[in-house]
Length: 125
Image (tube, rainbow, N blue to C red; front, side, top):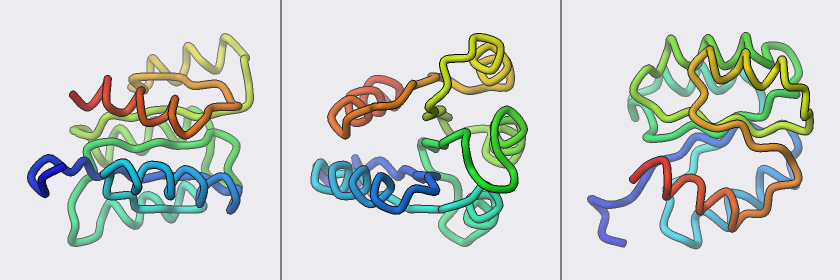
């Protein structure tokens, strides 16, 4: 993938193993992957010099700022980024709140690296 076509993704996941596994899969397939372990860390990265990523993949079950509140904050701070929610809950009320708050997709774990890649390619164009 030429450098101009590289899609920057911010991956927000508190599980070290899962975060690193997703990073390895996405990086091997041409994505530029930034990582954060908490919602607060993700928000700090959005303030950095690199600008906003094309997509943010955020787990809902994070310590501290999490769930629909995190979705709302990410949407406010990075309105041009595509937001994908990654969660272990199938709660329909939470799903509706996240989608209403601006999430483009609501993915229920387990999600393979290949499924995440396909969803990113579909939503990022």
